[in-house]
Length: 255
Image: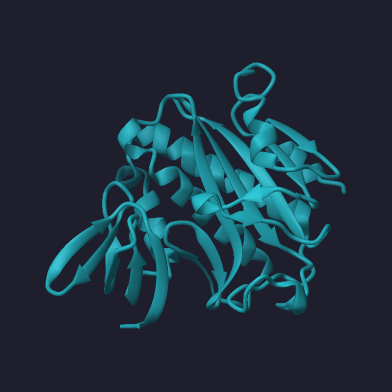
């Protein structure tokens, strides 16, 4: 693999032929701030022990998906605003993917899955490391065939009939992510930096009837009406407003 544009966009880029988890690999270097500064990244096309949300296993056939983890050092971002970091990553990835799929509808399913139409092409997982660092891991389905897709609600660049330029995809993602993280740090809030408006514009969850599977097993069905100042999803259900900070979302229908 050759990633010259990505290497220029990242503070440090390590490309590995195969690994268990790029997030775990990057986590091992998080204490080395000099050697692994802000916007350092590790990527591979063969991740064999990846994890998704709720500790779900995420594995793909070798060469069929891109696993990328990015280290963000965020001491200048207020703690109350750090919930926007995974949303910023979802937005940045959606924009990078949309640049290579200009004839498709690409959007963010709250909080940070990237969809092409109604099907998922990328998942993102952010984890805090200590008090001032965050690792953002993403998995993008690239050459995965229809038969290789794990579920019928997934897609890939290949299924969409496009051969992705992975170098430009990663470089575009890193540049956009860095810009939004800088904006959060400079302005002190997602509202002031324009991040909330930008995520809202890309978020295909808004304006839909959704089912929220909440921690603990409860379900909530209602209309997703907006994003709160802290990045929570606002649901109107049975005449009451609910602010959802965490939960699995199922799109039911357009309102």
